Length: 128
Image (cartoon, rainbow, N blue to C red; front, top):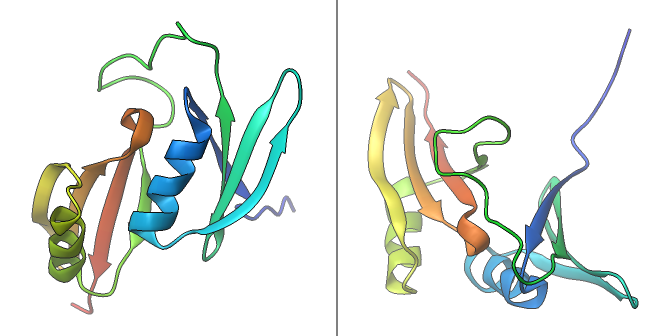
């Protein structure tokens, strides 16, 4: 039987260093390896259970098409207390595209805008 486990997500950015700082400063990621060659700049950050690789793209690279679109829509981060997480990030100037909402019993969600217009869901799961 096929077996797999999440290893990483890969993000493209005009400024990988600035994007990495966002994940470290605001979401508690740990800064990892920075690899720079003549043709590549990749900065890695890590959250518990999730590696994020951020690669530089050339100036003039088009952003993803507006939502809704096909392909990766967002990634989600579980937090113990959604309201306090949202308040903490708003105090740091983070923009939310969806305020905390009860999606269904036992699941509350909110969405924030990350660097390069990456959509990040914060979610709180509780027993029903």
